Image (cartoon, rainbow, N blue to C red; front, side, top):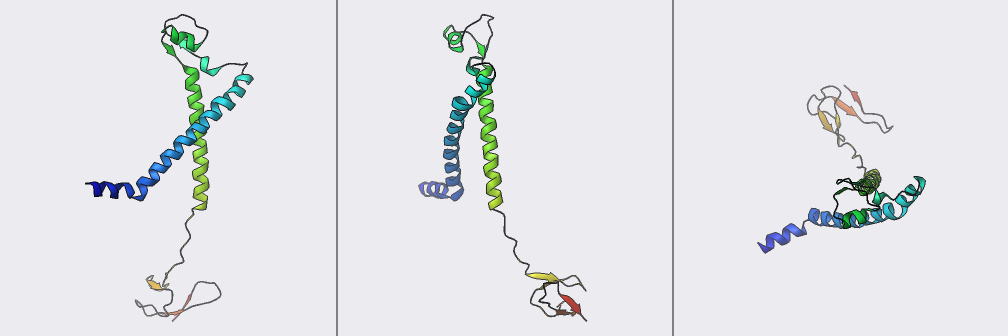
Length: 154
């Protein structure tokens, strides 16, 4: 059982997944800090110095100056300002991951493998590129070095 577990852990996709989760968690912390420490202060300044973390609605109908005061009083609250912060975090993380994947896919384009066969124009059978004669119909293949498709001589 220990040997099977070791084999499972050492498989490439499990290690790749673990590395991805660790990097994703670190990246999320960076984006969270960017949103809460840099983006939200600028947005709140542009919106009239509104503090998004203190945007909430109390369910008991009483008014509290801050979210901390409402929580200290034990009031049930709907914290839509904190939700807006989380939503902005998500959009930025999703966009950044989209851009990373898009860049990686551009570099990962698969090379087009040259064809190892051609189609006989007479019988439409696949034949090797080096063949001079079609094995199915017997037509003669004449290869051209001019970059054009091979022509047929009968």
